[in-house]
Image 1 (tube, rainbow, N blue to C red):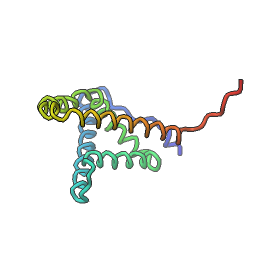
Image 2: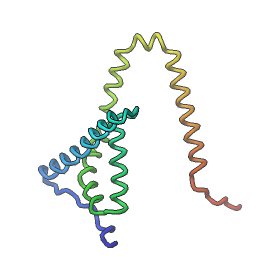
Image 3: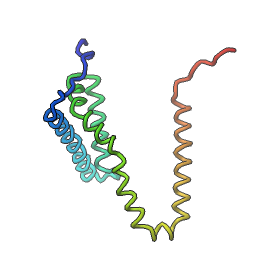
Image 4: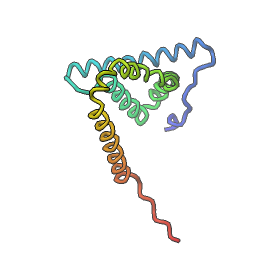
Length: 146
């Protein structure tokens, strides 16, 4: 059990070492995305392949954290820099959505009412579901006595 408290290894400050660790992390992420795409095709699933792959990676990550700390440390070592890089540039992923909105302007003008109703309805359903789940599963705090 002493192994569980060892710190996560950190890449040295050498650019070649950081690039190598990032490349391995990117290969891991891409491999799981392709594996998810294969599973989606093989089992005719409606969920996008990268979502399936990252769900599998999450399960593996959680199992490694619980049962095999060496693997967990090395997964963290390789995936953390890539994850930070991708999250820091997350805004770039909204560019294709913006282009899609611009190119489908005629459809948006023609079908604006169902789109607005769907957006408002799905937002309200999401808020109600989140509120109910939080109320149902959040730990109950003891009431303060005045």
